[in-house]
Image 1 (cartoon, rainbow over the protein chains, first blue to last red):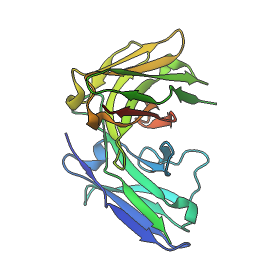
Image 2: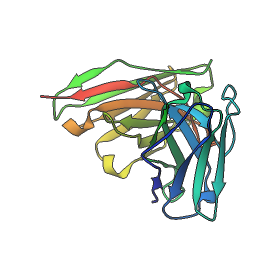
Image 3: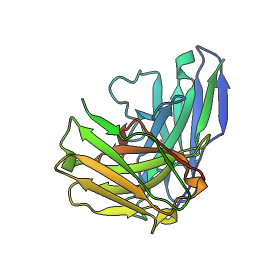
Length: 113
Length: 119
């Protein structure tokens, strides 16, 4: 098993760019795809990034994902921040040591102020 | 459109069981898996387990082994999650989500079912 560690919270101003990290505790970040989910208060999560860097249709190109093997982490970057981007963001990855199972990061609260 | 619709909120006493349903529409039910995820009040997402809608194979999170059972009814395209011996710390919103075998991602998610465990 491994853990995914995210910052508890980040904040940035409208129009700026923010990056949320997700660090894998053991095993290579590149060994399984990373997904990112957005959860607004009172709502179910929705996918903003899948397969490390793919955007579902309907998700604006202000959202992008990447992985960095040197730091064993994934990142979600949101550019041109809007107040509607304020939400909790969770990273997730497949755990191939316990097939099939998945691990979620602890979530990051994004505040746009 | 692809949609998962869950059953309504439940209030249970400690020691009781709860069974939550998740009805799928808009896709071939047996071509995907279903995972269940829960979220305690003010907390993050916790993966509970997975079931193949094709053959019923399951895999549960270790901490829930022995208390959770996931099943499907392919005739109605419905998945079920039963949790037994409920405790107060099982109070949470329970979500089902469709699992893509190709992308390993969860999409879409059901709307969530609040289960409250209280004496």
